[in-house]
Each structure stands twice: as structure tokens, then as C-alpha cells.
Image 1 (tube, helix red, strand yellow):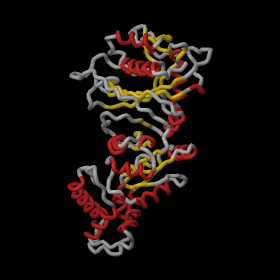
Image 2: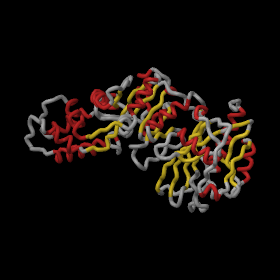
Image 3: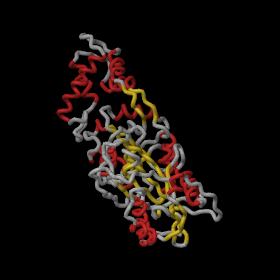
Length: 443
């Protein structure tokens, strides 16, 4: 089941297609994780709480500085640092400095004497300022990776030192098996600078193309990791809204760590199609809506199961949107049966690729959809189809056709306003045909 779009396009937009080259995802030897908003949610942050906890331990505070006054001074110091390190708080984004240096300047300048090392000051502040919770499903994911021999480590942009970060992670995830933990304050550079990623690669003792990096920031994490040859994974549940996707970079998007486990299971070392399709038929200021879909490659005697529209004439692969909480395999089984009547054999499902698609949705809306493709086989017996209203309106019927036939048919269609997915499906057909010609097609 697709999202339809009005035939009218945005004023002044042009119908252009961006296609990323194939990005082969193999099961990695190591997965690197960001810390904040990836391993853990630290969205509940109140610096006044942290300031109060530190001031309560002060040996001397002759000026009677309050938590609020302390924060005003800290904000002023941060502003001045921005002139040295750039607008984004503590980076330009090239270099990094430590919480130790920041606190020492701040408290000594205000004449506040503390009875503990500066490393302990940052621990006291952090523990009080932030109410932390582990990311949903992260413990299950880390256990899964350890059981399958995939190494893990942490690389985080952080003013606090590696010891403080390590202590926090061990408290939060006591059963972790991280090979190492890195806070950027101890390594001069911060993400997305390539040197910090190269440092992590050197510590891992691996080539970059065997490492995946998971994080919530499209620039620091996704662009930075891709820049040194690592495979980037964008983790979205706690990601900052309104981030712009980096141009020319292929990356995987994960909405829940359970989904990540499913994909790792289904990759099985297979080489998959990876494409990016941007129709640019929308206004960038429109509200965005994200959607995950699953589609099937069902091949019998050189022909593929397709859905054909009697109304508009296009062919497309069977499949549709995942329901909330639905496993990708279950989506595939349900959608294929509803649209074609074919019953997929669960044990036959193999990961075959993905397409990231951006286009106009309903009204003034940008639809950002990721379609996962799986090769599969079907049972001999069939079931009743179950079409929704629009599928009946479009007169959809199942058919087995060759890729060449489907491509020729779709390329003859000029009025695509009501079938915007034809662009995606035709590109996938061409990519699949190319793989077949290279000898990778399977019955």
C-alpha cells in the first residue's frame, strides 16, 4: 500500500532523480556507537541541578554565588569559547577542549574552592544535571552482537573525560563488552573531523570498511564516519529534528534497535541494492513524515511477481508500509498476501536491498520513506487478496512478468502524477536486472 500524491507539483520544482551507487552492507567486524541519544537518552538536562550539587560541596564561596549566577557565568564563558572554536558551542568543528579546563577557569575565576579533583567535579555535575535512561532495546542489541562475535566500542563528542564517560556507561550498561571507550576531550579532535574516526579505527586494528558507526547526528556521525570509509547508521528516536541529510552519502536509517537486529540477521553477507531517489517535487519548508515499507522479489522461471494497475498501467513490486511495532518479515508476509494472494515462506526470506525515497506526500508534506527489499519464495497454495480502497480504485492485479517487460512498460508512461512510486520501482527493476546480468540472479 502506497502513499498517493496530488498530480499538481510544487511551483518552480523540477522533477530530478538522485540515485546513489550501490553500497554493499556486509556484516561488520565492529560497530562503533555514539553515546548521547544513541546508547542513552539524556534529553532531561538541567544545568542548574548540576550547579547546585557542586556548590553544596564547596569549601569556600565568598561571593555567595548561586546556581543561577554560576550558570550565567558558564554561559558567558561558553560564548567566549565560541569565538575560538566556532558557533556550535565547543567546535569549529575541528578541535576539542576538556570539561576539566572549563571548570577550573570557571570556579577559580569566581573564587569558589572545591574539595575534590576537577575530574570529580564533572562527575558530580553530570550525575545531578542529567536524568539518563538507556535507549530502548540497546541491552538486547549489545548482547546479540557479543554472542555473534561482532566487537563494539564507543566514540563520543564530549567535554568530560574518557574515565567519566566510562564510569557512566558501566553504570548504565553493566553487561557491556566494549573494546574501548573514547571521549573526544582526550583526543584533541572531535567528530566529524576524520582524525577522531581514524583514531578509533587504529584502536580497533581494523580497516574502515569493516566498521559501522551508529549515531544520531547526520553531520558529526553519518557524514564523519562516511568520510573515512566506515558504514554510517543514523539512529533516529532521539535525534534532533530538522537535520539536513548530507549530499552524496549512502547510510542506513534505524528507528529502533530491534529493527537493527532484524537487519543484521537478514543481511547474511548478501550484497544488496542500495539506491536514493529524490523527486524534488516539494517545498523544503513543508512538514516531513517518515515511513518504513517492505517489498518482495518473488522470481519464478525468470519472471517476477508484480502488481499491475488497470487504471494507470504501471508495474510495481508487491509490498507496503510497516505497521507500528510490526517486524519487517511480518510486514512482507502480510503485504504480499494482501496484494497478490501469494503466501511467502518465512524461512526463505533473504535481504536484497533498500531504497531511500524523498517526494511529495499528501498535501503540503514531504514523505521520507525507506523501502526494504527481500528476496523470497512462496507456498504452492494461495490465499484471498485483501485490497484497500485505493488499490481497488487503481484496479491492481497480480502478474508475473520479466524485468525487461516491466521496465519497457513503465518507461512508456508519461503521466505519473498519481503514481509517483513508478520512479522508485523502475530504478529498482533496472538495478535488479543489472545484478541478474552479472550472474547474481536466483530462481
